Length: 447
Ligand code: UD1
Ligand code: CA
Image (cartoon, rainbow, N blue to C red; front, top):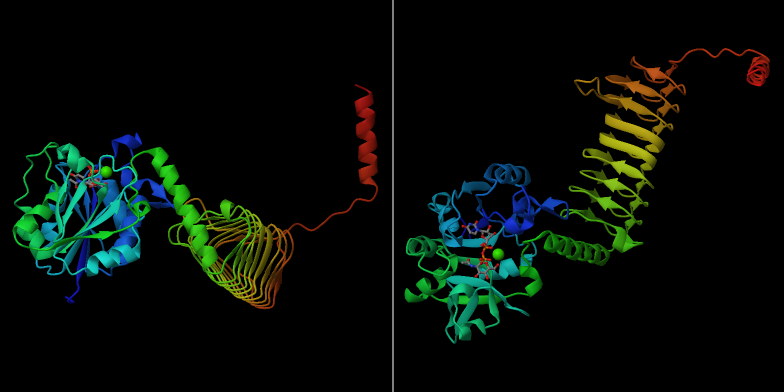
């Protein structure tokens, strides 16, 4: 264990009854990722030895989401919600033998900045609380400070009128030595106005032990918690506003920033351009100088430098676009690698496929990848030419420099350099169209 080892405990057992939802609060999405995902990613920024999520309401679903978001994170169950102190106590078995600092975060507070957390975790006091000066202190816990630092936290319900005048508030985020946590947590009592075990009481207990407690200040906006759908919508607006500004600061051109939607983990390179009405789902990276034209939807994909996507294209999970690839309108790509210089301009579905470099995919091409039970792969070599309206019935392999005739249904492999045609031969009947139309008109008149 390193000297500055950190463990993070994320409290996520609460019901969030004001969301009016069957979904546990921390699974509601912000920036296309469940709220708890924001806490997990903040936690990861500290490079912790351990991350432990305390679950309660909807524990199974929350644990499942946590496992998907961060497979290294552990979950522990708090079967009854007896307070924030009680919640942290549930994590103690996981913390056995851990010697560094324990940082406590809330699963429903997504905006705590990485710099703020780093300042908290590296502070020299035995116990540090993240505080803020509230415009409207409302029902927050109040921080009572003296010239020796932080003396205690008084919950709103337990505060007298004078204490309620204090505007320095508790964000809920706390960092303390693991040994101190183990020593003090058993001493928490629930003899207070809420009848709960308050984590915040650790401050006064630490002071009584002669330990030093202090406050790190942050902006109130960072401490924003989400309790209602309206707050979730406001948080989404705030999240998107920041993501747009960050992208532009990183050198991305957004022609209409307000209509571009980012996910928590969207990465876009310098001098990339994003047109209006583009939505980034989770797991997208776009390299420098790529161009995303209007009305595209991207998720779980990688777009290499110089590639051009859209307008009206959909890149689904596993889409990997090489350099200078062109993907045009009404094209859907899923779990497919397109090597450098591939062109797929119009009305096409490529799924479970690999396309070699500089291959041209004609309009209306479809990889028929699903037989109703299983998925099958399509492999297309480099410099191939797939004629318009080709159905590629997978599993199938098209060789290098091969061609398919327009309108072909290809069910057998095509060797390198071969031309495959799989369609009915054309029959032409001279004058038949004219005669047929005349006969139909006569029939109509006779009615
Ligand atoms: C808490 C703080 C308060 C602070 C405020 C900031 C305490 C006693 N009070 O109050 O000083 O100003 O947050 O928002 O800590 N949770 C559990 N298990 C429980 C109880 C809570 O996991 O048994 C989780 C909740 O899901 C939530 C977080 O802990 O994510 C905070 O709980 P909440 O009930 O909202 O605390 P507050 O009363 O707001
Ligand atoms: Ca709260």
